[in-house]
Amino acid sequence: MIATKEIKLQIEIIKNTKKITSAMEMVSASKMRKLQNRMLLSRYYTKKIKEICNRIVADNINEKNNYININKKIKKICYIIITSDKGLCGGLNIKLFKKLLNYIKKDKKEYCFCTIGKIGKKFIKKYGGEIIYNKNNLGDYPKIIEFYNLIKIIIKQYDNNHIDCIKIIYNKSINSIKSLPKIKNLLPLKRKKEKIKKIVYIYETYDFNILLKTLFTKYLESQIYQAILENIASEHSLRMISMKKATENANELIRDLNNIYNKLRQENITQEISEIVNGAALV
Image (cartoon, rainbow, N blue to C red; front, top):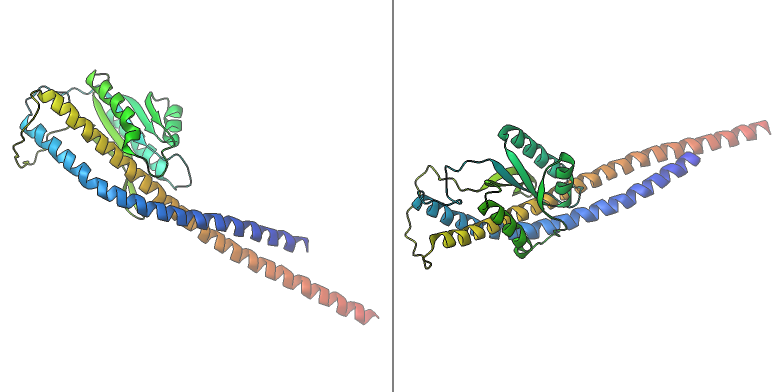
């Protein structure tokens, strides 16, 4: 009887846990769909800004400027690493960290970090990396204005030659069930080998460097914000999958425990009947 009571209690506990995982799955699915809509709308703007920058790089390749100097010697790299603030999202962050560490080992240059997300900050601190900027508690729908301070810091560091290259690492959302860790170069822009269609731009400012700085600031804003949206969408996608698996596992466990409970209950009933029959025979 004690064993059956314990099993019944375990079943109730698992049922309560299942309610939580099922609710988390539905919440993550809803948030993921909203973020994917934002992400897809933002992709077009991000793509167009980069196209304009690439054309200017192609047209002004001989200009002496930090943003478009393809022969710049790279000594120190700043990695902007985007992770989640919370767990329960599968191997999202672990895969990202593995890719980053493998890349750093191969590159063998000095580096520093800008971390976006609590888990990223915790990892870099444990790794012993230099953090020049950190942003936590993004929420599910961050606004680009929240990252203006980050843009100012990295542009200042870049302009003063404290860093020579800016790269961003994040999880790119492929679809509702798949994402991949990606490292993307932001600055300096490299000239593409393929021929870029020439477009004549009319500049309103007399100072080409001011124009470049303004344009590349917008370029960095769009690239970083897009990466953040991609990463949050990937986070909710993997959390949805993780919670779905947890709910399925809970169902299997409940089914197995119910079978054990019914078997024990049947054995107890059989034993009680046997005792009654034996007692009656003695009388």
